[in-house]
Length: 135
Length: 135
Length: 135
Length: 135
Image 1 (cartoon, rainbow over the protein chains, first blue to last red):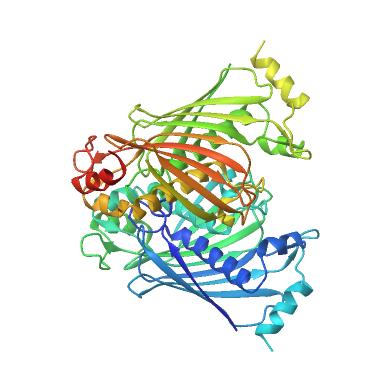
Image 2 (image 1 turned 30 degrees about the vertical axis):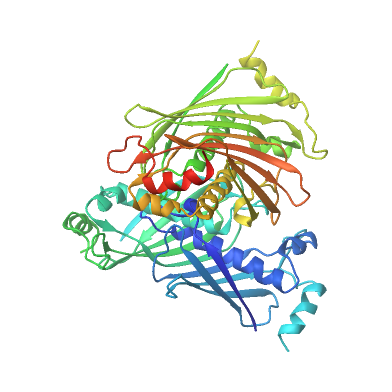
């Protein structure tokens, strides 16, 4: 299992007319959480792209519990429960500064060979890192 | 049942490093589809906000089948299958110019009283319009 | 001189906490105006990219006169006053549905060879189209 | 004179089809730089809004020198040269991780009374803080 935690400050650009974070922008928060989780494992998504692998999202589910507002300091807790094979699934829980759970997200990504556009397995470099987290 | 169809041109701002529409931006397409569907029914979301009702999203599910690219002309088919009571559920199918189904989205919104912040029933004006579509 | 006019509906995603269009989002409106102006001339920006030319922005100036709100129907008037050589300069005026001038933008783009990353001249296809508009 | 410095990591959502940060998104970086600069002075923009003052942008100028890419770690240097009276002008210089100057921005904001929608003077709380920086 891989876990990570990240703090994020809500930007003005991310709010909308209701005064809340626009509902589509949680996808950005998940993306940053994924990016930092992989960086903390010693991998970068940029490197994967340079290795010829794209990781497009094939599924996303979001449950909106409470709204976030401008300048809120959010904590994103991220978990990868299963060892990635053809896909990699991230679960995110977002908490506000009052420690209230405000949002739950699940994002599934697939490994795609950038040249063929077909699904593929992760690189060896990736697998080696996974060995540390999954038996 | 309410159905609607809408064409949308992919903007440069909506693409990302992979050359595809950024996965969070489909939420924007759904929003525009909802807006135009309600406008075509003789309602506007702006008016609902002026009537003191907010319609925040409480659930979203997206299935990404094929990617959309810059300047693609997309068709969004939207369906509301059930008469809205406390919530209103939209189902969206997005097709590209080659008539391929590239994306499926389901978005659920709840009626919220802007003053109390609590769930509420739709306005009478809204119900009258619904009478035309649902028995 | 090349002129064009375009209508745009303000999206919810484009508004912010103040209830106005976020100040950075006018750049998106200019981009769409450029895209449609070139399309109306028989060129597409997508085609230019396929011809190996990028057109990054090197300068932008925006004067914000009045704010735009959610669901406003805006008219963007665009002018290219001078024949493009190494750069192409667009001037935009944005009007709201009450015919008030709310925003003025100037955007300058440079022709860049996608391979070398260096400034270059427009393609012959581009020049031929320009011949129709500039003596 | 007020100066501040801030690091920002380029998000995937901020890139576009060219592989660069979308030209409109620099406005977001300036916004974050302003927010953090005012926070470091002991003020928050959120608080100003709660005090009944909006600070919309009335002018922006951007010079794009070099492009930023996904995952770049950017440094934004911000300067307020003159004591704000009816407006507040921020100058931003953005550097990449190779210490190259890639972008220059100038953003001018006006103090607006949220109730009347008219220009107004800063609050006393704001003026007191300014006294520390300007004679």
